[in-house]
Amino acid sequence: MSESLLPKRFLFRFSVPCRYRQPIWTAEGSQLDASYQLPNIAELEDTPALLDFRMAWSETGLAFQTLVRGKRQPPWCRANRPEDSDGVRIWIDTRDVHNVHRAGRFCHQFLFLPAGGGNRLDEAIAQWWPINRAKEHPKAIAQGQVRLRSERLADGYLLDAFLAAEALTGFDPQEHPRLGFTYAVVDRELGELTFSAGSPMPYQEDPSLWATLELMR
Image 1 (tube, rainbow, N blue to C red):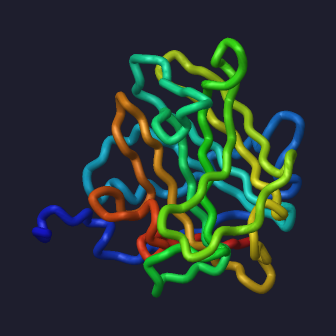
Image 2: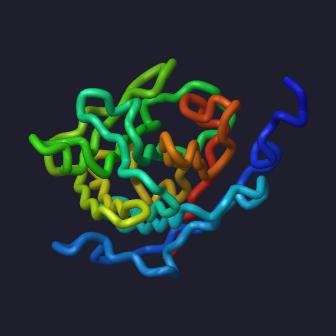
Image 3: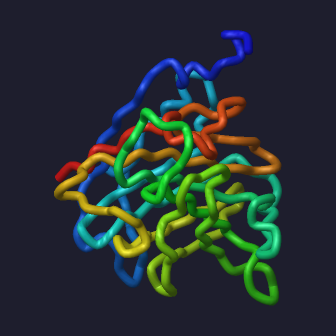
């Protein structure tokens, strides 16, 4: 592979702060303000700023809010084809291990779609998804451990989600205050927008390519 084809983000290991918030989730969602916004590392590759990604933590779990702008078409989402749908994928390693290339039982992948559910295909969908080539999978999640709100906008959408601590195998902020983390907004119109190294690197299955979140108060 030519060096010119490598994403610039592949050349660095990133560590960014994730701020504490309590309560982290209410009846109105996470309501994360701009102080919870994660930096746009993709600026290293001159990627347009089409994404505002915010994240917070507490002992009860993780919340994130994703604002996607710049779309001219509604997102394409189908409950029976989540892996092909427009939406947000996130990967979390509750042990932040960067010296292995296959996911273990502390590694998680979640899919969040702004639409595609219900009879009218207008309900948001949240789903755990297995990581390809994983040596082990985390424990199964129960109903109610993942919450999701979605809002359609004229040029995009807003996703607001909460992952309960019980949905994250090994989540222990006191003993392990660093998380391996990356996200990808996958969109038929906008393409692929990732946090850490994106394609052609196999970030979808290789935890060594993920960044680090420092859980800070």
